[in-house]
Structures are given as C-alpha cells and as structure tokens.
Image (spheres, rainbow, N blue to C red):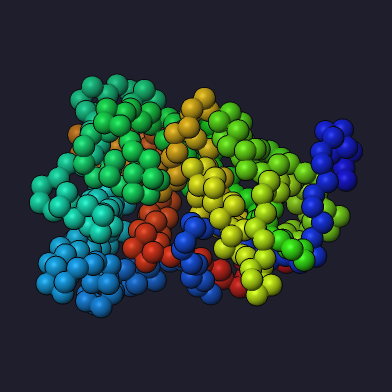
Length: 383
C-alpha cells in the first residue's frame, strides 16, 4: 500500500489466488488471436475472402438460399467497391487520400449494415452526415458535421446500441481528440491530447468466484460522466502487493491505480471459473470502452464526447466521421490545408490519412468477422 493510497482511505482488494490477463471485448463475442502484427496487406487479404468466397460472405445472412444469394450479390459488390477505393487511397499522398478512404469506409459500412438494414442500404442512400465547406473560414475549430438520415446514424446505432438523433452536431474539435492515433496533432491544434487511454485488465479468481480488475495510469483517470459510469461498476482499491506480476508490468512503469468490479461471477457448475461472466461485468461499461490499440494494453477507456452528459463516441466512429469531414474539405475547400497558411491543419489531416487507415480497416474486419481480432506479435509481450 502506498502513502497516497493510505491517505485516500481506499478499501483493500478482495484476495484471490489465480488470475488471467484478459483482453476486453464485447459480451457474446469470442476473440481471435493472431501471432503477428496487424498490417494492411494481411487484413485486405482476409477481407477479400468476404468479397470472393460465397461460403464466407453468405454465412452472414439468414433466410432461404435464394434470399441469401440476393444479399450476397449486394454484399460482395459493396466489398469489392470498398477494397478498390481503399487500395487506390494507399497510393495517394497526404490528406487527399481521405476522399478515397471515406468512400471505402462508406461501402464497408453498407456491407456491415446489410445484415441489420438490408432494405435501407440498397440503392441510393444518404451519407448520414452533412457539411457545407463553403461557409468554412480560416480555422476549422468551429466546424461541426451534422447528422442526417442515412448510413452514419445507422452505423452508430448498430455499433453502440444508442440512436443518434437527426440534426445532432458533431464538433470537429471534440471528434479529433477521440482518435488515439492523432493525439500530438490534436494537441498542436489546441484541442488537447487524445482522450481514449489504454488500460490493463485481468480476471482474478478465488475458490468461489471470479471478477475483473483494471489498472489505470493515474494520469488517465476519467472525470465527469465517464468517471461516474466507471465508479458505478468498479471501485478504486489498494493495489495488491504483487500487482506488477499480476498485470505483467515492468518496474520502470509507475503511478497506477487499481479498480475491482463491484460484483462477482460465481464459479460454473463444474467448478471452473466463469470467464465470460467476469468479462460481462467489465462490458457493463460498454459505452466508454473500445478495443485496445496496442498489445501493451487489454482495452481502451474511451470518455464520453461530453463530460456533463453521456454521448458514446468510440474511436471507430470518430475516425469515420472525421474522414467524412476531411473528404468534404478535400473536394470543396482544399485551401484550408495550405501548409504555409495553416500548417497545424495540414499536418493534422496528413496524420489522419496516414495513421487512421489501418485502424479503420481493423474496425471493419472485426465488425464483419463478428469476433474481436487481437494481433499479438511475440516481441510486444510485456514481460
């Protein structure tokens, strides 16, 4: 127990006798582990299976064989269009590629939504976002894409479980800090560093029950509605004496706080730990959780878009909305990216094009596969 923990009067953690380091993922989904680093060629090749192999693409749909084949026709062509745009974008330098990346993501989104909104996404559909660059001034800080009926609010509801009201404004200076990959560029814009932060996560057990424990860096502790949601399901406790061994943390890393779940999952009838039940306790905070970005962490704590009210905005959807916004500027107002007049804006959107491409591809891959996709190269293991 540290002096600070004593001063705070924290409760002691429940004692446990075993533990498993466990990545966080959606309840009801399994996790697929790849023993290599994520790369665009690898993921593009696996997505191509969805476009070209009937047994892969058709399994997403229910109904008669004729009904499945009808949807499979639409699905494979959404995928082919998306893959073509994405591969073309990879050869375009700087922010200009955002236009192609956006149309790739639009078609990937239609393919994803085809299982839940088959009628809506076939034929002419609206982007679901609108922005008028003609009204845009020198600074982009005041810009806010507006939610319209169409793909984006459908995708938002499908991924978060929350409806997104038509007419909602999405301030760009709030969206950008929700993207972990462009934290330094967001800081240079004066919008602060990235808000999503990785955390460590284990499931611990004793003779009767299991429960999750999180380890957050003290610089990353949430505030506002995000902290309220965290504290509803987890309580801050004194770190156990062997916490570095439990979480596989080097002695070179300091200043962590431990949080244990307020509830526990009883052991299964055969006496084994209920790992799924314990993970479900963490997933109760799904509105502020996102998959990990690097193998050093097991999950990402993603704050609400607003501190005062809950507005889930996971990085996957922030990347999508910002890429749409960038595509509008690329088409209609490229002067805002002038590197002599607006160097911070130019560098920000160069970074969005460069750094968000692979994560956006991973977002789609996980969504279409239906399982969490974990890439763990052996060199990334912590201890």
